[in-house]
Length: 298
Image (cartoon, rainbow, N blue to C red; front, side):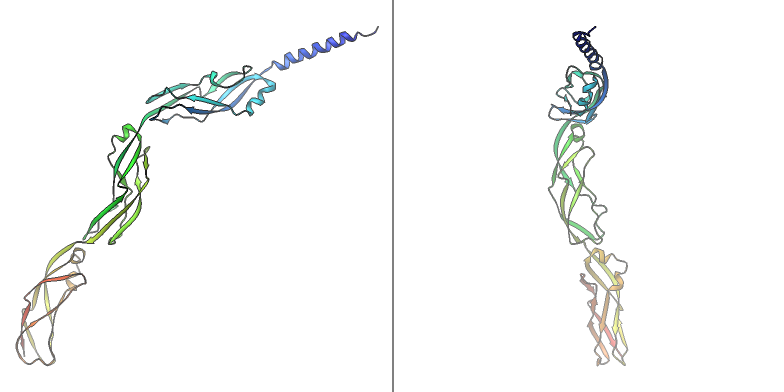
């Protein structure tokens, strides 16, 4: 009996159709990472925390094309047009995932976002110069200048309301300070506040403070050979003006000298003589009492 080729062909077609029904309709679950793009945030609002860059999505679809989904770079567009200052809860919606209809979104991780949103503001505040330690004793500062003398702050409106100035990082000055100090100094910006610019140019001058002091100084006499000399008074009172840092030094009195040098051929008798005062550089003799002393040469 001859085989009927028509029946054989029909059986083959039915077998192929059944194979397609079994394999083509078999569903598989695949996890994939989907990038999140946030758009439409109202101007003046700042998302303090809660943002994510990607979500994990569990997709169910035909086995044969599941791999192709993983290779696609899908993006979840998250519209933030309705957020407001405070705590905002935003749910991820499977309808916003751009997948063909043959696929089913089973799960999204995380399923929602909790965004902490605050009102953003800007203001301009003056700059205050801060020294790590005070100016050295005996010196005064003058001509302090900051460029720029004010900076722009951007941050939480509630936080900016409490800020009335911005300080520099503490400046360490050498001791004694130089006649002129210039440096670019960074600013000590509050946390979560943008400062523009981040540093300022600081310049300032320093000068020694002037002071006066009265000293009782013994008179030093260089006697001629073979002569005895009596001096009245034996000590003089000097009023000296100069830098306070020098005059306040405990060793300063020992640096001041009142000296009388007599001629080698001075004959015995009584005289009046002026003396010479020696003192550190930068100091000035204002008054000497007496300005002359009495001598008795024997």
